[in-house]
Image 1: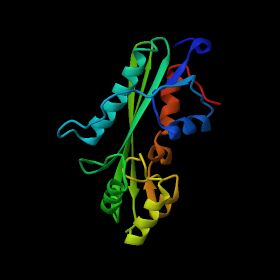
Image 2: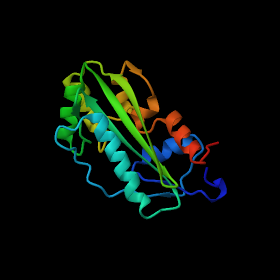
Image 3: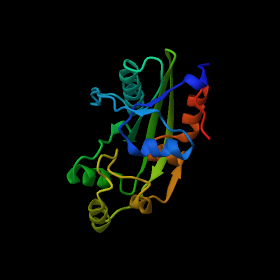
Image 4: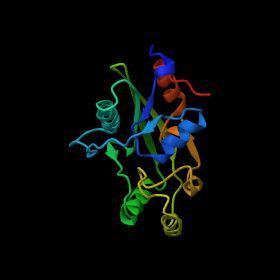
Amino acid sequence: MPDVKNTRLILASASPRRLQLLKQIGIVPDEVVAADIDETPHKAEDPVKYAQRIALEKAAAVALTYKDAVILAADTVVACGRRIFPKAEDEASAKKCLEHLSGRRHRVYTAICVIAGGIVKIRLVMTHVKFRRLNDNDIKAYLATNEWHGKAGGYAIQGSAERFIPSINGSYSNVVGLPLAETCQLLGSAGIKGS
């Protein structure tokens, strides 16, 4: 177990939501460093393997610079079957995602990776999310909020999209971008405790 007094935590993520979620449980990283990696899925890569690979690559990339720190990275994937939904970067891709998710159940996977003292630990968390059927006005109104920008699957559950979701089965914070119970456990084993 690392010496807690000397343990620095580096969050390998550009996501403001992950930082916010960590603060919610009393964990404030010493630094936030976005990993510069290629996040393109490999051909025929399934959502679970993709999430785990990207989380590991993010953590490993940042660990090269911060060798003595605890590195936390995560990757969240929205999936229907083997289909991985992109992070919506424009209205057209967000609209396409919402049309596909409309009236269906989908899965949200988050892979969490912690590297501490050369030891790599990865956990995967999955949540089922059910969308009600969306009409054109629902989609148009949601696109106008701009909440979809940069979000996997083209929506943010913590925003106005929550009105489209009658039920979830599993971790809510996972759908936001970081499953807190599992993250606490992994960080705790590396000597990082929340309040």
